[in-house]
Amino acid sequence: MFWLAIRSLRRRAGAFTATFLSMFLGAAIIMAFAAMLDTANGEGATGPARETLTTMAGVVGGWGLILVVFAVASTLTLSVRQRAAELALLKSAGATPGQLGRMIVGEAAGLAVPAVLLAIVPAVPLGRGLLGLLHGTGQVPESVGYAFGPIAVSVGAGVTLVSAVAAALIAVRRAVRAGATESLRDAATGAERLGRGRAVFAGVFFLVALWEVAITVTVMRGKGMDAMATSGQADIFAAIGLALLAPLIVRRATGVLAGPVRRFGGVTGDLAVTNMRRRTGQLAAAVTPIILFTGTAVGTLFLQATENAAAAAEGLVKDAEQKNIETLNFVVIGMVVLFTAIMLVNTLVAATAHRRREFGQVRLAGATPGQVLGMVAIESAVLTVIGVACGTVASVFTIVPFGIARRGTPVPDGGVWTYLAVVALAAAITGATALTASRRVLRTPAVEAVTA
Image 1 (cartoon, rainbow, N blue to C red):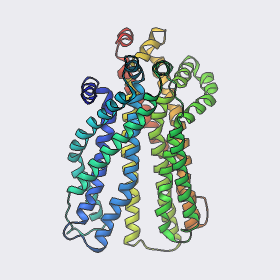
Image 2 (image 1 turned 180 degrees about the horizontal axis):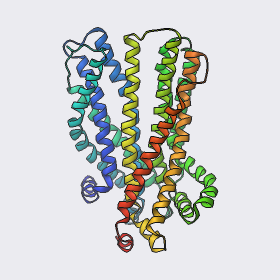
Image 3 (image 1 turned 60 degrees about the vertical axis):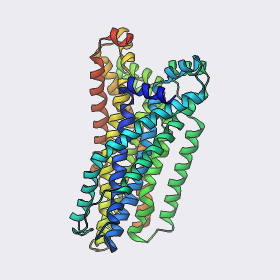
Image 4 (image 1 turned 180 degrees about the vertical axis):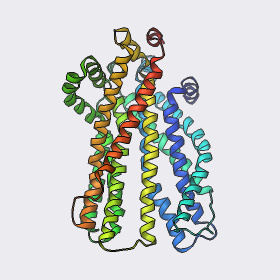
């Protein structure tokens, strides 16, 4: 089955691009932050400098690790879901669940190895840039040299390989458990049900987020900026919990929005609603990075704004530790914006490219290319609304408890324009990517797209 997996990768390189890019970018980010541990163990890194480097690798790298693992699992699940018909036919031909599982795990491992090797190239300058940031803010002396060594490589390779294999096992579990007839039916209808495993994992992440909230408003209350240590992670855990529930959320939200969309969208709106109801799985995969982007960006920006307001009210001048925390927060924001934006583009392009046959069928049924693009635009708007709404809910897990712990009020500091900027960026990336990818797909003649 391993060699079958390798042949599958060769023949379907385009279909695996999204998963490969997630692994590649994830490994690069993990290695860049893990390089701070190599640097901390090098010559000249002692005392506060060593502690700062370790904190940068542990705190920010840890948050990035959670996002990366989830991104790999999300894109790999989308890839397996798009191959539902292929897997069902293999079952009908006599393939056993174990054989299918080994094939998909082999594909994941076959992608992870070159992704890790290639990720070293951008990871080295990215890590050097992180150290330069710490040099520029005076948190690490200029005499501390950059080191990229065994810790960075081993952590990046280990995490990427383990997360790829684990994600493959999770993604393939549902696909191989169902019978051949049921799999063919689900592939034809695009059915997507919220599995028990997803619900359990979502509950676990919500419990962790609520635990962080409880610690923040009780144990960390009145302890100043130290409350960031617990509240800063709550929005990430809550966002992942909501992302795991995305199939259910998308299905319910589509039902609620179906009436207004059809009423104001006309024929195009009706096309959008019909397709959204049939594609909850693909839409759930696309809405996931919007939730992560909005939740983490809004939560971290308002967290830092509340801390700045509290420090100003107390008449405090930022010391080295406060500068360190602020730098960490902005690094988190930058990392989240970059990675989730790329993940969003990656997922939308992969999902749209898979719709070539669907677009061809809609056009042969009488829809114009303009109506197809209008349908995609409406879908993008609905995705943005769902993702932003869920992300906003996730951010509350951070900004409200921190406001209570730091300033005694649940009302956060930070202007409305900050929030609107995050929403606008999410909408712009979603709409621009979906429409650009759709225009490219529509270049294929309808008959050719259907028969391909």
